[in-house]
Image 1 (tube, one colour):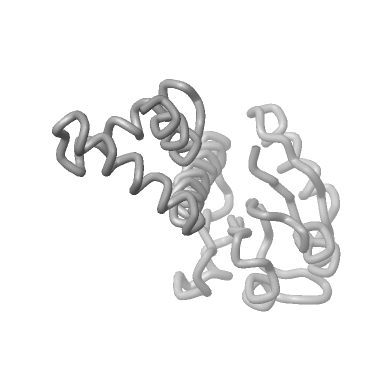
Image 2 (image 1 turned 45 degrees about the horizontal axis):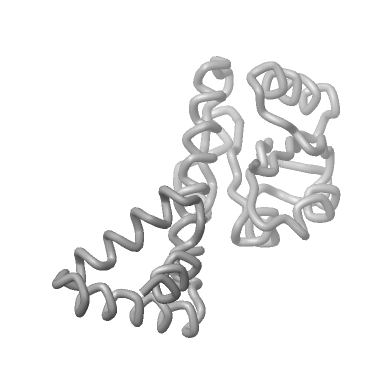
Length: 178
């Protein structure tokens, strides 16, 4: 589940956006009215999305984006006059007034993109021990079953998906069975 916070300088605006998102099935963790509240809320997030206005009493959106963890993306809602399209990275912009479906669709797109990035980062994060175990299992499959390296990798990958275990656990099972 993706962490979602809403931040607007007026509490009523924040609550309206929160209600729209909640009715659309998005769990909103917090409604903030200042940038310091946002930073306090998002500081320990491993990933998430901030639905935000462009200006707060204590900070502008560009400065807030720089202070947020890199794993938190920003969906900024404001009039076209307040955003020229050349803002910092990690900000998706929607012009006000907006349609509910536009907001919901954009938020769903951002959530799916974060999930894909998270999967890629987790697969890159295999320990050397796990990588060695997978390599051994592939070598064993290649030797005993006359598979190519790609076929052995695909076999371990498919067994992993079918059994709901990670590739290192599946490689360990292959090693113990053979």
